[in-house]
Length: 318
Image 1 (tube, rainbow, N blue to C red):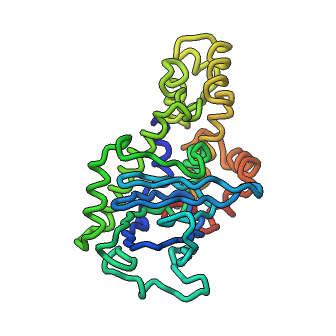
Image 2: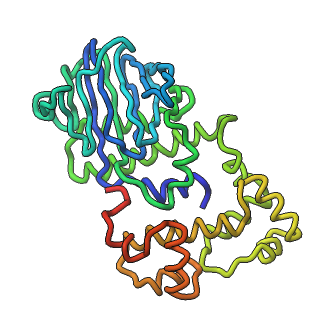
Image 3: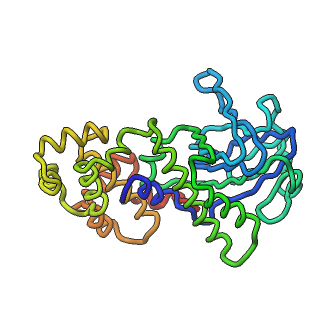
């Protein structure tokens, strides 16, 4: 499992929110949904992204042209508008509820049909938005690596997936939700692949391409239940223990065993939510010798007991 596959083990679309938005100028949408990950594709026309100020300092607006795709890593608020000077007219809240600035609900008033809303179906500006409304523990490593906003041009991404998502978003056929989920995932993968190919990708991402460290990463991720040590990993990849520890820390940013602990406990967190397996069973699956050992490590790492984590609201994508 590589870095992108690891990410999709987290925000994998399950009945994801996919919507087509159509507006004639002037338009401005204030986004306050705080979703962990949102993808916006500018299908027609253009617009501007206005990030909220950081530390009291204004952030420069980012332009969106036809075919561009923007990724938003929550929970920051932001505005998308036809022009930076256009004041917000609509607020999008958690749960994708839309209101005016005064709180009037607009969901029905702006409905243009199945998964389509706005002022005019044939408007000058058309966007398709895909929102992953909850995150998984196993995805947080990569979500932390993404900037709050990443914009990629159409030329950087395989546009065929975007074209399919745009086409399918307007349909209402059997299993349409599942079709949109899979297309959204594919578009996310293509977008992340393009962004991580840039020089500003995190250094540890490139570690997967290193013949030694990449193999060690995959060994741990494919078989977290194995009793890995730095020495056993080094033997598998064919270098000394010291050489692997030094190179792994340099490329990944943390020692091998720290990475393994983080990976195991992220997987345990997901298994607690997505299955009814006993804590003892989960402990064995992620490399802990007993439920007590897993519980101790889990609480130290996540600040909450496995039982409380399981009973908390689901943290996976809805």
